[in-house]
Image (cartoon, rainbow, N blue to C red; front, side, top):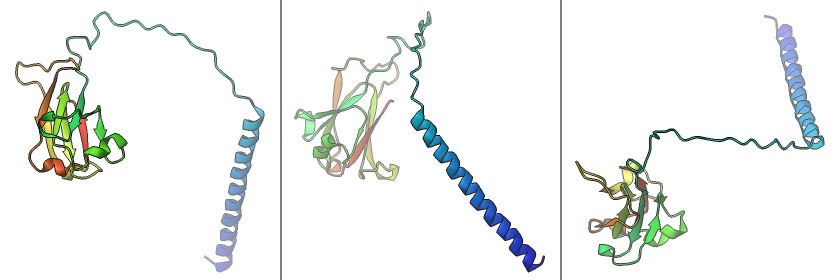
Length: 168
């Protein structure tokens, strides 16, 4: 391939790129003009009716109990504690008093609490877990006032920087 042919083909590719960029910018500018001149249309409301099946898959018998945890700074859950329903780390203002200062937990519902030694909840930093799960032939009460207190192992409460809640 001669050098003049290469230069010519490079020039065509270069001009083609410029043309493509110009067309894309033109299309973008056109879309802005269209957006400014057309008013948004509010669609008509659609009313739908839903009918529950005669035998729904979840009922009062098999629904899961709501999960929550109270974190405590004292052993034996001897203080008021703070309620959480999912997870916590230094990002959450309500969790900050419990960083390096969580010594017992009150679990409510069917739940597993995992606690970590880092704020990012890396699995390699798991310090431990506490479960409130049904055993063979046993059930966990669904009442929000039926909860169980657990003390964390000595020394681990001073390491906790985050936690998560999972269903059993």
